[in-house]
Length: 213
Image (cartoon, rainbow, N blue to C red; front, side, top):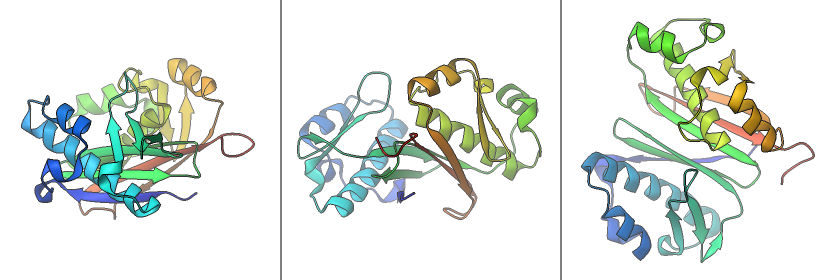
């Protein structure tokens, strides 16, 4: 499966007007929290770099705008882009991923660090807790978040309905219903700690039975 990834340092972003379309700039200016503005811009910069490289187009022909409760809409030269994408950010970095061969895609980046026992027991099902190290739990978190993004549900799912056990995805309740509505794609998870030092990064991509949609 071909997935391209771009990492952006949020401290080294170009001016927004150099990369955003007029409509994107108007939305950007509605974001009042500086951290949110920076992360939003960083994600767009990363995604536009990928699309520009893949399709040989200018940044200003790539437009990414909010679309209801799900993923934003991505258009190139005024037409929907024929592929899938995902954006994530954590602790000063933004990451985007694209694919023209997957049917669904979700990514997540998180910094490896100690977290509370309450977080561990509240977010992970006991079946998932085959290890308790900070590296393992952070990697597991990124896997679950990547799958949620693949499903396109935002933060509406119960975390226990999406379980990642030894690299395999198990879905229950509302998550399973959404998965079936999507056509029951085969989901593959990959996780790495080498994309950025001190971080865990996961990508989940899905392919429909019978090939690319």
